[in-house]
Length: 260
Image 1 (tube, helix red, strand yellow):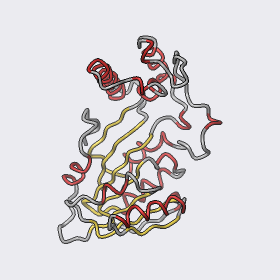
Image 2 (tube, rainbow, N blue to C red; image 1 turned 180 degrees about the vertical axis):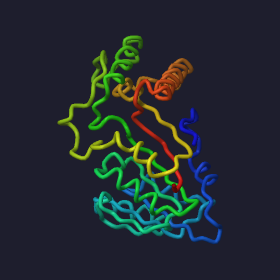
Image 3 (cartoon, rainbow, N blue to C red; image 1 turned 180 degrees about the horizontal axis):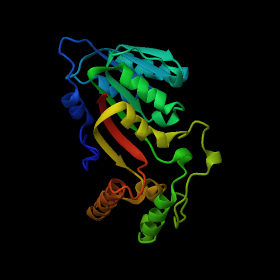
Image 4 (cartoon, helix red, strand yellow; image 1 turned 30 degrees about the vertical axis):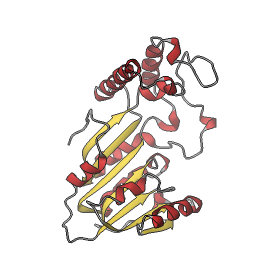
């Protein structure tokens, strides 16, 4: 397993294609859990190198599915939409070549059950892909995350700490819980352990333990200038090093895994 990689911006589809080992004659079926409007998810199923015969998609919101249906039907992608609670789904065994969960896992309550079902439903040679928040529950950052963010914030010049309202950010804080929806990051800290338990992780980038509390509300100050990009690269490298060394917990993951 490649636990961490420094190359966050690799083309994920290239890795999916290289990892998938489904026989060419096999009609490819995909699965999306917590599909929402499918704006991001659909891109995984329209690559000419992996022609999908059909995709099953589940979400609790029928309204979101209406938008998703318009999008995918316009692309000629056959998607079977169903309103359902992902937490209670019992998926068919060995059915899907690709399972996608994009920014939805942290809304699931039964994280371990969902990870187990994903492994159960994957075909041998299939791939699971997720891009999600995996940090502390309810966005309540750990003391280590806040300590590093606050110390580094003091070193940033004032022009980088300007907030939209015109004030200057002088400290890092967690999001007040009463400002969050009831299902926001309810068991987010269980996602990475559940994936590692039930699937075989083959590629992973974990990050954001520093960057998320540090740059929240001020990231727009960084421009395309060489100076700003150099500073951003330093911050990303520092964030990578801290997460890699387990000095702080990551807040986000991009993970590809196969059937265990």
